Length: 332
Image (cartoon, rainbow, N blue to C red; front, side, top):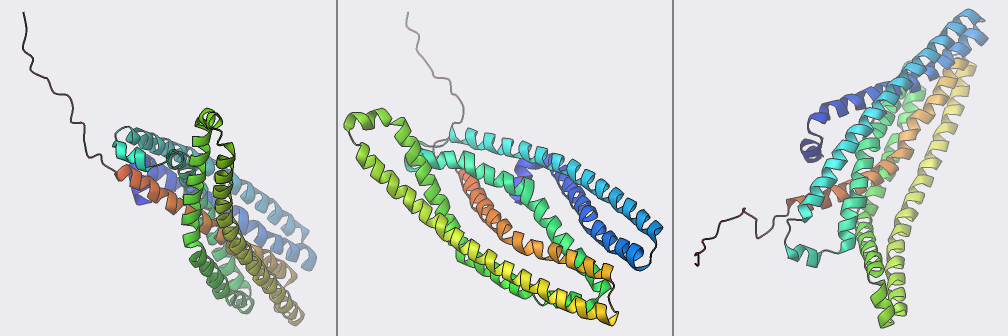
């Protein structure tokens, strides 16, 4: 990633990371405070019968939420525009590079592979830089701050949440280990399929003249099914992982309801604090749901970036060193 920012983001790098920090700050404001304020409003209005205090907290929470969303909105515009500039430079550099490569490269590389490089691979890089970095970071920071806040309310309940974290991490990294090779193969199958489709479209007239339609249809069916098989394998493992994470999340929520009920009865937890806890459970467990998506996107990003770097590192064996004037004998 350092290589990418150094060569294609350049002077925009500082602006990009400033915008990421701004977006994260806005997300923290709009996700953390309103939930905490809701619990405090419930305790103030219902438990303490202080409607004036409840109104002040309500207005304050709305103001903070709006400020947070404005910050996030401005940040997203900056992030997307900087990433657009970076990917435009990247695609232009890749395109220009193709003009200076040896003929051997084009003999050994399919048209579909080159289209995938300039198309899907650049899109994968764009998606990770423009969305996944800032979204993943702010979700994990929101979860961390929510957990810390829960510890200040009731350490026993908060520490009970932490008992589930090793299970979440184990199943997530187990998924990554099982699918790492599958993503690489799936990318290669996609490039082969794209190449075959383009070559068939370009050679459609020749295929019809030779009468090889049935042969080409069978070959396309074979390539398509091969590609789909790997997509299904990845999807199967992904959905299995998601169901495990859902089960752990629901079980964690049930445990929190049970413990919260006990603490409310004993007077160690107010109704407002109990609502804060239950609301923050969603914030804490959300990264566990999203982590699998971010890992998928990171896998695509890593594979695509390696392919792009390999292309740009290629050097032609015969280099163009400029023009040289030839000596000619004048004939009169």
